[in-house]
Length: 194
Image 1 (cartoon, rainbow, N blue to C red):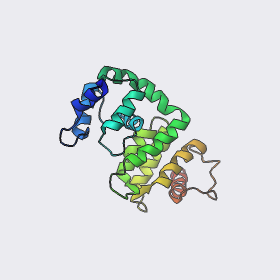
Image 2: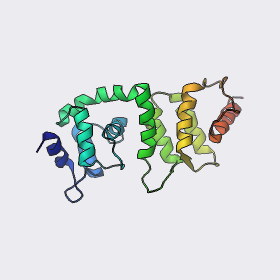
Image 3: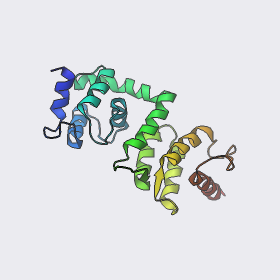
Image 4: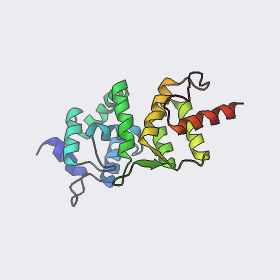
């Protein structure tokens, strides 16, 4: 058995044959990384894990081979390079998109509740666009029009952070194809600032 497989089975649930949430928590403990750390989401992205909180043997092999890691220590040492890889612009867009899809836990689910979105935005985008994320999260928590966020709104907010000058919104044009929730956010921000 390859070392990558041996490492997998040391965390896998014997009956399901997958690493489940309990196995991931043990892995995180062994890596001395909190299970809510963004690097664990980056690891799931690298593995192309399809189901939140679970890694299959195939996903594990794919991710760990590409990270050249067959021990926990090598995996720990690979995390800084993984972070750099994720932060490269084309990869980050893919990671940001993946983060949303990874949180869709039910079959045919297309949206995520506001509380979870706020946590996810903080985790995934907070280090890049702290002020925008903080204000948008505040807006999401006080508004009552939206109970969930869909992929279009999620990706729209990323584009918004990259393209719109903040906090003055001088180049924001509501006539362009922004999700309505962002038009409402800009109106709320402008009202808050006057």
